Each structure stands twice: as structure tokens, then as C-alpha cells.
Image (cartoon, rainbow, N blue to C red):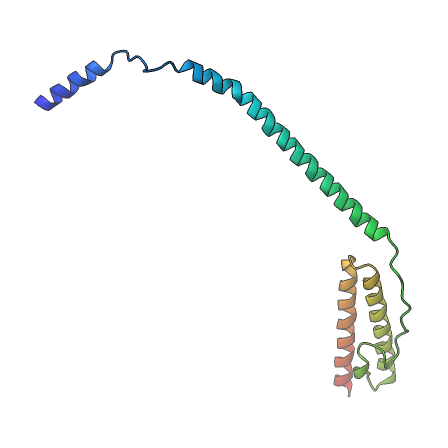
Length: 146
């Protein structure tokens, strides 16, 4: 019980006014005066970074657009024949199926040429895949008939 009495007395004595050891306001005022300068620098750096990013994106977009506009040198490729076709090793024995296979091979070569000319045309890859699927279906049909 005695300890509690001493603690309460010590707490009452702490409640009085305390003078700081040194004057704090000049340091606070100096920090306030410096902050707007730092804020201006940060804002300037942020605007500069945004400007550089915008210019870089614009130049990149312009270069991509000019790359698409440049004509690509066209090379004359031979027309596909049964020997030069991508799947020449799998020509069906049935003349009707062989004709369809040559048509599919020709379409496949033309699509590949178009993809070489326009490499960013993703839809051409889908068309090539569908053409190859039809070619495989044709070969399965011949195996089933023969």
C-alpha cells in the first residue's frame, strides 16, 4: 500500500510545466521553409519523367506504324506442286482426294506467304491451323476409305 501512495505522489508532481532545454521554433520554421523547395523539385522530376515516358511511347508507336507502312520486298515463290507442297509425302491415291489435297496445300502456301508479308496478322495463323486440320481430316478419310 505504501508503494502505491509514493507512485501517486510522484505522478502529481509530474503534472507541472516543463521548460524545453533549447528553443525549438527556429528549427521548425527552417524545416517549413525548406519543404516547398523540395516539393517543387519532386514535382519537376515527376513532370520530366512523365514527359520522357510520353515521348518514348510516341516514338515507339510512330516507329511501329512506319514499319508496317514500309513495303516488304516480295520474292516470287514457286507455285505449289505435288512435289513442292508442304505435305507432298501424303498425297492420297484417290484422284478426287488428291485434287482436294493439292488445293489445301496451295492454300497453306498462300497463307504462309501472307504471314511472311504481315507477321503481325494473328488471324492468318488460325487460318493455317484450320487448313492443316482439314488436310489431316482428308488423310484420315482416305485411310478409312482404303
